[in-house]
Image 1 (tube, helix red, strand yellow):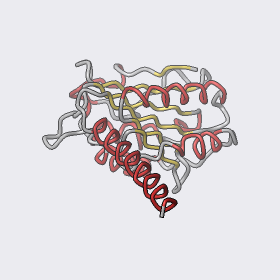
Image 2 (image 1 turned 30 degrees about the vertical axis):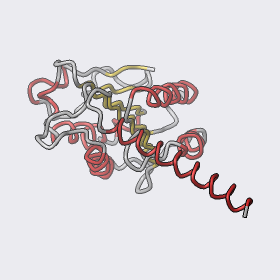
Image 3 (image 1 turned 180 degrees about the vertical axis):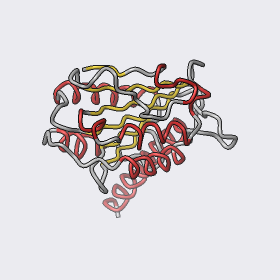
Length: 212
């Protein structure tokens, strides 16, 4: 009987801890005063691996404090997605799946249109836009880490451009609530347009490549 009581207390403690974690995740996700971040990675052999790993670890540590973050590693039809402080939080996969996959240091298949559809669904689940179609969180960052192949295959237009225009994000440019950053190796041509051939309101002149 005493043993059963101890087991019951342990079970209750575990249940309380799980409920507390779930409540914390929901609170962060639904707190408009938190910042939201999407970190997209399209890995190829032109990218400096150690710098990329360090950058992602910093983003993960930041997510534990600042708010909802989604990591997305493009991988053909089987992307690796890690959610931190977002519905279906699977933060353990950051160390267990995402980082080990990156450390293989291989060029991965990138399907820009597939990734765009996946990301729109993920953003919807994370309350990126509210019920009126406005940004929900006080600060929002879309961050893309890509290699040379990403541009040569036209994925900048298929993913970044299409995502930007489909969600009508140009209205937030320069108002302090939205940022889009594209990081790439130094070998990428300076003259490449981030959004491809589409350029309404001169957005290609407002977003610049950030070189590793």
